[in-house]
Length: 251
Ligand code: IYR
Image 1 (cartoon, rainbow, N blue to C red):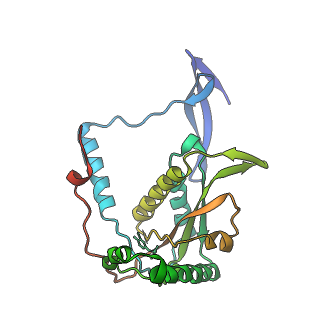
Image 2 (spheres, rainbow, N blue to C red):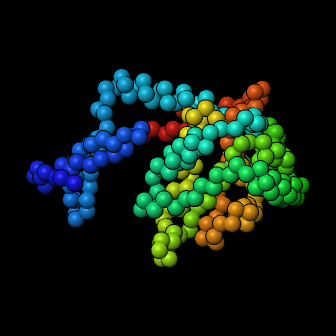
Image 3 (cartoon, protein in one colour):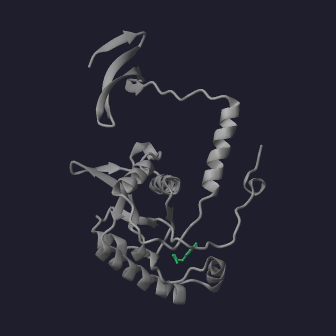
């Protein structure tokens, strides 16, 4: 690694692999308060481009719908890996990345998860959920039956890590729920952007997921997302999102 100094920063030549070939690129490095930093740049866009980009992304995200019916077609593993990589780009407390994404395609594990989820949901819908809650869910058409847990080609079970373990040592994690929530937002956006659909399923209680997946005690299940193509013909509730004026307060 060669480096050249300019003022307090250094230009370092690094190599990276892109599409199978090695190439060289320069990184400007600088010590700030005793810690290595790298120069970060983004394209300096015109205001017209900002408007165009923000509107295009809004439209893309506004076309997302929660879908509970999946096609049986599978999805390349590579796609799922890219989606999870994207979730892993989320910011997190002290950059601890306190998440584990379990990716399940094994039909037997999917079956076990469906059976256990339905067992809990049956009790929830018949005994645990108050009438008002069930009335709120009526327009969405949910019930205790969760066939999507077997029909979707993949399930992603997101776990939050109360603490980390590296070389047998406990690593403190911070803002775990917030961090994992943000990562799930990225995950859902990535699933949509790839052209697939999901439903944010929250069976309750969901400790059965730790057991089935053999996760350690410092990890707690956070969210369960079936992922796949939508069923060829499917319908979603005729509901609308709050308008900007209802969700923004300008000062
Ligand atoms: N967890 C149950 C019930 C449920 C609760 C809410 I709030 C929803 O938006 C949807 C469903 C289930 O998954 O059916």
